[in-house]
Length: 164
Image 1: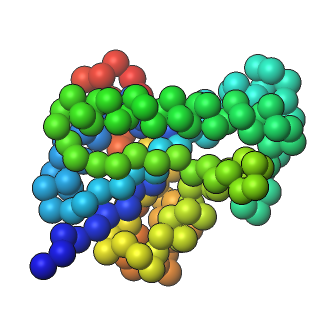
Image 2: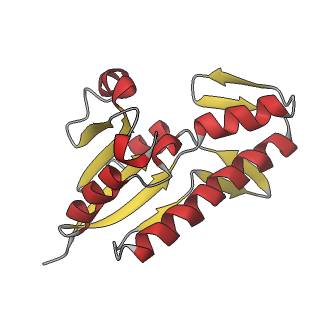
């Protein structure tokens, strides 16, 4: 029998791999083949603002006006990916980590993580959206008509980790 599959979209605000997130992932990986798509929205917005690179939010998420800005966003996501992969390896938690960026004909195309969640819907057995507790209700509303998607909220601060 084939192992069941789980796709996880994880907010970049949890990318530092807090102990509660690691414990949750460890339990899930015992039952599923796990693929994690890391986010980085808070970090990306801050970096773009710091460099005065224009962006706005449209129907499909953050729209970054320049190639330089899209590269910065990709770099942040790839840094999160590396840090998550390294931490999971150290913790012996089997999972594949991806970033929501496509290179289509040498054009960087960022994919909003929530759109990617829907894109994976027909392929994965279970889909999780890991977010902060303060965002959980809004995320649940976004995915209410998709029974395979479960939104999991983690506390906005993690006392045992000194913050988020």
